[in-house]
Each structure stands twice: as C-alpha cells, then as structure tokens.
Amino acid sequence: MFELLGISSQALFGQLLIGLINGSFYALLSLGLAVIFGMLNIINFTHGAQYMLGAFTAYFLLQYAGLGYWWAIVLAPVVVGLSGIIVERLFLQWLYKLDHLYGLLLTFGLALIFEGTFRNFFGSSGLPYSVPSALQGGQNLGFMFLPNYRAWVVVFSLAVCLTTWFVIERTKLGSYLRAATENPTLVRAFGINVPRMITLTYGFGVALAALAGVMAAPVYNVSPQMGANLIIVVFAVVVIGGMGSIMGAILTGFGLGLIEGLTKVFFPEASNTVIFIIMAIVLLIRPAGLFGRGA
Amino acid sequence: MQRVAELNKEHAVRAYGEVIAFAAMACLLIIAPAFAYPVFLMKALCFALFACAFNLLIGYVGLLSFGHALFFGWASYISAHAAKVWGLPPELAILSGAVAAAGLGAIVGSLAIRRQGIYFAMITLALAQMMYFFAVQAPFTHGEDGIQAVPRGKLFGIVDLANQTNMYITVLVIFLGCFLLIYRIINSPFGEVLKAIRENEPRAISLGYRSERYKLVAFVLSATFAGVAGATKALVFQLASLTDVDWPMSGEVILMTLVGGLGTLFGPVAGAFFMVTLENYLTTIGQWVFVVQGSIFVVCVLLFRRGIVGELGQLLRVKL
Image 1: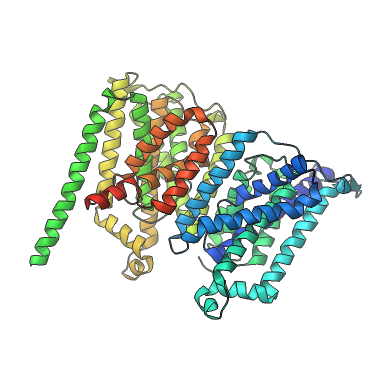
Image 2: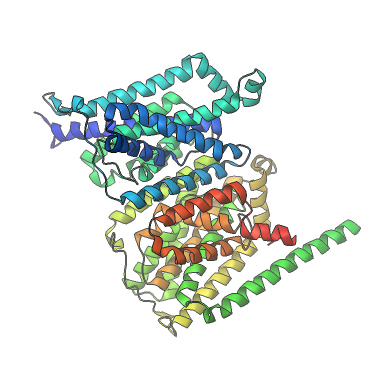
C-alpha cells in the first residue's frame, strides 16, 4: 500500500475507476449524439431519456419476463432503437429542412414526455438492478480491489466504441454514411437510399444510448431522471470534443471521465462542475473544440 | 415617389396596429385585478417579462439560449439576499439583481458567442447547469430551503409593498416599462443590425458590422431583462429557490415564447399568460405537468410554429 499526497491508493484508484465508467457512458452517449448530428443535423435532446429507457427495459425484462442481464444487453438496445426509428418516422423527418433549433426543441419535448411518464409511475427513487452472477465478485490487484462488473463495463464500452469507429471510418457502409453526411443529394444520385440510411442511423444512435443505460443499471440505480442530468454533461463533452470526429468523441469522453474522477479525490467540491469549467477554458483557447473542424 | 408614400403608409398602419395592441394590453392589465388574483397576475407578468427578454435573443438575433434560468434565478437570489440580509429597499434590491444578471450575461455571452447554432444552445445550457451547482453549494442560497421570508419593503421609502395593490402596480409599471424599452431596442438602428445578423450573418459582417459585439450586447441586454424579471419575482413571492435556476425553468421560458410566437412583440406575453394559467389548473396532476409541457412542445414545433400571436397576426394581416 502506498499513499499519494495523503490519499490512499484504494481511494485514488477507486475514484479513477468510477471516472472511467462515467467516461464510458460519456463516450457512448456523445458518440451517438455525433453520429445522429452528422446525418440528421439534429441534436438529440431525447438521448438522456433513451439512456433511461434502456435501463428501464432491462428492469422490465428481468421483472416481467425473467430475462436477465445478458438478454437485456442484446434486447434493450434493439427495442429502444426500434422506438427511436418510430420517433424518427413520426416526428423528426418533418424537421430536416427547418432551422436546427426546432430539432432541439422537439427532442427536448419528447424527453420531457418520456421522463414525466416514468416519474409518474416510478417516482424519483431508484430501483435496484443486481449485477449478473457471472460478473459478481472482483480481483484484488494489490493496490486496489477491482470489481469484475466495473472492469467489464469499461472493457465492453471501449470495444463498442472502437467497433463503431471501425465501421464508420474503415468499411464500405461507413463510407456511404460519411459521404451522405457531406453531401446527401449527391449520394442519393448514386442510387443509395439516403432517407432509409438516416432512419437507421437514428435507430443506431439511440441503441447506443440504450446500451449505455443497460450497462449503467447495475452501477447506479434505475431511475426516471438518471438521464436528465447526464445529458447536460454529455453536451459539455460534445462542445469540448467537437462533433466532427468519432475518435475525438471517444477520447474526450473517457478523458473527461478520468479528470472528473481525479477531481473527486483531490477537490470534491468541484466534481460536479469540473467538466463545465473545462468547457469554458476550451472555448477560450480553442473555440472550435479539441477535435472540431471550425464552428 | 408613389412607392415611398405607400411604404410610409404601410409603416404607419403597422405602427398603428402595435399602438392599439399595446394600449389594449395595458388597459387589460390595469383592470385585470378585478377578475383575477393579484399574485397570479404578478407571477404571469414576471414570466411575461422573462419571456420577452428571452425573445429578444431568439426572435431578433436568432440565438437559442438554453440557459436563461441562470439569469432569472441568480437575479432572484441576489435581490432576495439584498432585501433580506443587506436590508436594501426594493428598488435597489431589484437593481442589484439586474446588475448581477448583466454581469453574468457578459461572462456567459462572451463564452457562448464563440460558437454558433446548435453549440450555442449546448454551451448556455452547460454553463447554466454549472451555476446551478454553485447555487446548490453556496451557503447564502440556503440550498433546498432557498431564501425565505424576503421582506418586500417600502418602495422609495414611501410606498408599502406589503399591500397587494401597491405591489401589483409596481410590478405592472416595471413590466410595461421594460416592454417599451425592449420595443425601442428592437426598432432602433441597433435592432435593425441584430435582425440583419439573424437573417444573414456573413453578409452583415461583410457590410462592416462586428456581429460578435452586437450579439454580445444583445445577450447582455436579454440577461439583464431576465434578471429584472427574476428579481421582481423574488419580491412578489418573498422567496428565491433552486426551482428558478434549474434547467426546467430554461425549458419553460422557451416553451412560453414558442407558444406565444417566436419573434413577435406580444407573443411572449400571450405565451406566458397561457402557460401560467395552464399550470394553475394542472397543479393537481403532479408529474404529468412535464408530459403536458412536452406534448405542447411537440405540437408547437410540428404544427404551430408561428405561435398564438403569430397566427393571429397572419389572420389579421398585421404585425404584432
């Protein structure tokens, strides 16, 4: 056991791990936001609510269908992603030709509807969701105790993020997607069904949010407002990273999670606000964001 | 020459419509206490001023601020603190709230205008959330309790505001004064430049206008008026609480302006009265309020983008 500036290694690495877990959620959510914004030109304010829907779907599957975590991690993103596709077809598709702000306002309204409905039935207190049996327990690494589930969250979300990066940046499907982001009209002229791509992109982005929600369920409780405050932090993450780069979103997400964890150890009063303060500093020094391509 | 005459006539008709509408609004508000509770009316007037301040930014510069609760809420804290702890008279309490809001507006504005469009909304939201956490932690705000039992005091040392009628008249005068000031700003040469920036910012820049400065001044003005509204509300309810700085409040003022009509002069007032009345009837349904608000957002964005006053103006073919 060693100590650093009077902080035990247990506390330091424990907080760093929590920071990494938060960072995984920031990365998954800002990745989804960036992909959606690229194709739809809409900032999806419903993202936090869809993260919450993912967690609740996992809870419902366990409670009413007896399907556990491993089913939920597959089914919940599919179910919530499909609901996202319905949302896109019903509401969002009418807004693409309008000013950006209407997309933000509409998705904000949808977030209020989802969160209000769940708050009404489940109150404000959280519902517990237990860690799957295969991932219970943990490893003693000597300098800290590493719970298996938390290690799994970090590794799995990193894998999902990198897969997404690979698909978008290195495959043919991804090249269609990037081309349609740059110039949808031209891509349509080549015979690619861009409207369907837009719908599926939204579904995919929403599914990522739901996946983050399922992974968060055993770490935090399942509660109706779990997404509301998170989404504001994720917005700050997006402003810091800029939405131009997929890898940028992933790196910024994990990095800010770590910084937040460190702040909790050394200066706990600022742990809620540190990401916003970093955002202000980034705006002063690099207004376009760390990985941004102009405003 | 004939065209100029026609244009002048058109302008005269337009101004005529606005004058009539303003006179009607003022008359309605003067006789309103005979039909409705003064506290309800004062609440609606504070929100109407808040929405007008917000509309100055989104309607005339095209900037969507998602953090206006920051100015509203912090001004109400400062004015409540000034009245209760420092013992300042109400006019100075409101003034100190407005000055605080202007200062915060200058800081937030100079950060937020560094990015455009959708980022602007996200930055204002994030900074407002940061200041919300400060409000939770700062000792003088008393956390969840808020600043309670704020004395209304005596206006200019003479008029006792504990009297409900006196308070109503004060709020009405503040509202109408700020409304006229906002009208003057919108129709000044400065306001014309703001509208030019809203329509086509690169062109405004190429004509030699420093759009950043104009946007910043507009942001500070909007924050200041929002501050006046928040500071007045603190005296009316004798309370400053976390509700006023939290993000749902930012959403609410957007909704009021959207329902009334973005970029219309009277829209925010109509929207504020509509929403405050609605919420008055909905107090019994608890969390469903959020669902109702969200549904109104969705309907307004999809079907009703001009808002109440915008549609009315379209119908009567006048600019309101």
